[in-house]
Length: 311
Image 1 (cartoon, rainbow, N blue to C red):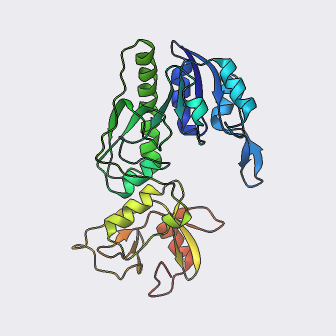
Image 2 (cartoon, helix red, strand yellow):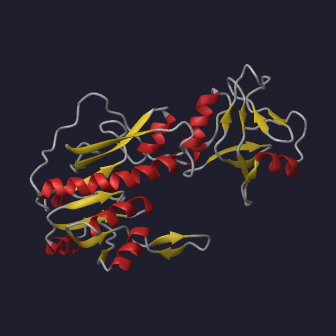
Image 3 (tube, helix red, strand yellow):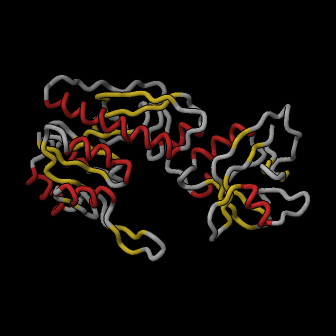
């Protein structure tokens, strides 16, 4: 089949590699326009655009798929199927039915759970024990299309969103390639999503990464892991913002109690109180500085007695 691959960030690269090395022809890659990156905010090509260029695959960077010129280019390519992984823009209705086998999206959840832009982050926030990936046909509704394939992935106790997404990107690449093969061979039939079990995963913003120290330790832990690496977990100390890396909940029966946000510093660890038991901080990153292990940060910060996070 002739494939038009649509994707933008690093997470789409394993799928691109799998399809380019498969039995089908990737006639072009569709990605978002070059965007500002780094401290200088200089325009840079997306990871998918850079890899496609290395592989010798033509790259399309339309500002909008509603542009008649962009639609004309896609029609001229005559794709049989358009696999999609984190493209980052809506496909307009007049293009959805252009490929005979449709636009086939790889989504990093077990649909209909966690429809939306941040499924992995939300499944960690919710404390799910099992995640997964789904291939489905794009329709006009948000991640509502019929399902073509699924896989499951056990969520490990210390997984961050970055950890889980990296594993799903690799395993999901195989799922997407198998889905395309199945469509080409006429072996797959799409099944409607169940009406029950629908949940939504909107994109997380900076405020979602703010730690609420009055929450139970398990909820603080989930929030930090869900927001690592993006949008980043954080708190404040005396009005100064601190970035936080993954932390460790401790047994409240063993460690003495602390007020929410209250710090207790020892030579080997820094504890912070929550709404239940304490947690041991991992890394701490003051604004404009590098992250450091919590004990190193505490020694440099010269914390006053009774210092509390979240103030």
